Image (cartoon, rainbow, N blue to C red):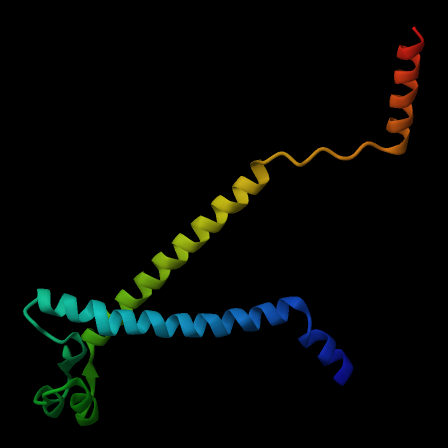
Amino acid sequence: MLQEFKKFAMRGSVVDLAIGVIIGAAFGKIIDSMVNDIMMPIIGRIFGGLDFSNYFIGLTPAASQAATYDAAKKAGATLGYGQFLTVTVNFVIIAWILFLVIRGMNRVFAQEQAAPPPPAPPTKEQELLTEIRDLLKARA
C-alpha cells in the first residue's frame, strides 16, 4: 500500500498540482498586499482619506459605538462591508490577471498550432527511388 501511495504521489500531475497550489498561495499574498497596501489607500484617498477596512455597520448598540472594525467585532455582531469591498477588489484583480495569463497562453498555443510542421526526412525507399531517377536522367 505504501508503494502504491508513493507511485501515486510522484506522478507528474500530482507534483504539478502541488507546485501550482504553492505558487498560487504566494501569488495570492502578492495580490493581497497590492490591494491592501497600494490600491485601497489610493481609492480611500480619492473618497476623502477614508480607510475601507474600518467601514462597518454595528448590529448591536455596543458594536455601533466602536471606533474600529476590530473593536466592533469584539463588541458584537457587525457587518464589515469595507472588508468585503477590499476582498471583492482583490478577487477582480486576481480574475483579471488570470484572464490575461490564459489569454496569452492561448495565443502562444494558437501560434504553435498554426505553424506548419517541418517536412519529414525522406525514407530509405524515397532515397532509393531518387537515386534511380537521377541515374535514368543521366543515361538519357
